[in-house]
Length: 334
Image (cartoon, rainbow, N blue to C red; front, side, top):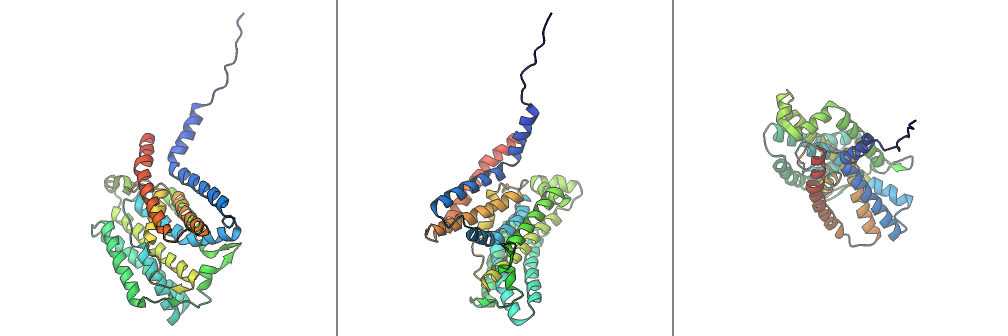
């Protein structure tokens, strides 16, 4: 009489495969999250001031403009384009808001400022999509021209903002967090939903991965390119508003090297520089990481000039990781 013994339980290969697939799909986000955790531990051990609620709330407010523009830039870079003009748009809109508010209604000033950002983004998008010019060249030209325009209308001087209507945009608080932080959170949620759960988001990825196939499917690729570059212009305009109202002053020098910070954040978050792959959450975490590094270096009393040096080095490392590590992992997944 034979007896039947149960085989020892084994882990389902399907479950292991699902975990592997999850890690592969989210490798960029998980990587930058791990780096962020390490930075939190490091700076909290080095200085008691880092992990205080006041410091963390201030960091969240300071990185909000970067997070907002990084969300929009994710759409742009995923299509295989880039926008180098966002820093100059921040400078122009910050100065314009102060000038408009000084001579008219604060609400009209706010609307006109956002329209300026939107308009510059639209021009960049039209020249890229319909003029068939490289976005790198178009936005590089805009970087210079828009910054020059900001200097022209201000003569290089800052203009104070005293409006009780505008200042709460940058300095108001709700439930312990500053208004810019809440605006950034809304931008991340909306950006994540549009990117991952709408037809437009799928088109954005398709433009970067295989624009010709999308064109043959009857989709006007030019409109997608126009839309994403217009979006970054609007986001940069909003960042200019937040910057000016936080500082209670509009300066044409606002946003200097801001484009470097935004692009670094997006690449750190795992968005492919050549297009076809992006992560809104990754970009937001990348922006927060840069903010934490800057804040931590200041608290450690490191020379302020090391901040842009560090950001430049991080960008180089991020590009190498993007090309070598993320690309190889994506290839294995495919």
